[in-house]
Image (cartoon, rainbow, N blue to C red; front, side):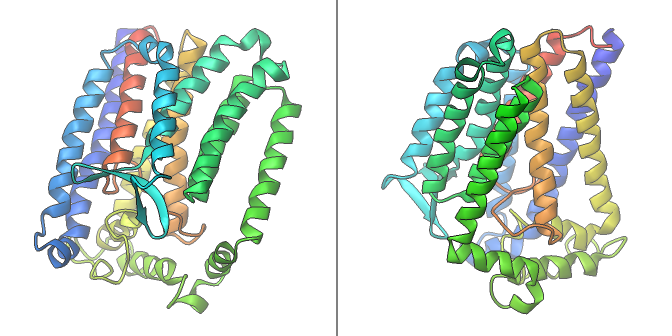
Length: 367
């Protein structure tokens, strides 16, 4: 039992730390020239990223030693705090970037509340579906509360506007309610309603329609809304199997916007090639395998759902980012977990990993 516990615990730690280390190296490689041109300091972004990583590793260690029951017990506090932070983005305190107010500025840093909403929504839903199993088939008790909570956050995100963020939050709800045992009729009906609403919102927004057209025919819009996708594809194609070498990529030379954040995988693909990308995929699959193994063997249903939810956040976000970088989905401000530059995403995911590691200790009898 102890040996297996160590295998899962060490495997999760190794996969996460390896992704973080790759991220630190590639943030420096992809941001140095841009940072020097904008701030006169080529180390501007990497110094901040190292600070985020230091705090993140500290959070992983600390939360791995805090009983996860603490977060179940204080679930409403964290939900309320997230609600307040998301609400503040809609006030003059919100920081507008690209026409959307999704950030809060604090002591020279920017916080994106959405990233913390993801983790603490999973905590709430894990507690809810774990505790309400006997009443989960009843609409008013087992389905209405979680969909209302999710709906409130989704509405606030749409007002920012952050359509992609609202879709991600709803994705968390649909995944958690599916594994939580929600009556299938309720689940499929709400999914159909959500899908219809999403299609209507896309079709009634000129900007979203144009982005969709640019996604379908990026090279026809290479100087407009398809620019990011085209430059990303160029970077991946240029890298080939082995890549052009660390630091020798060309797309980060002001060709590819957001090279150190949303499109950092394109820089990795160009500089480290298919082999470098494969290493990232292997680490993600390793994390997924160990997470699923742990979830299947948890003694407590709440723990089972919490591990599943954290794994879902990381793997789903990774899949979406990969899809955007490779041109399978329209660009939508999606960072690559543990690798892209940014404190909000990294710290929130480290919170989740810390909780998962505590569950490993709690369930030391995993088979």
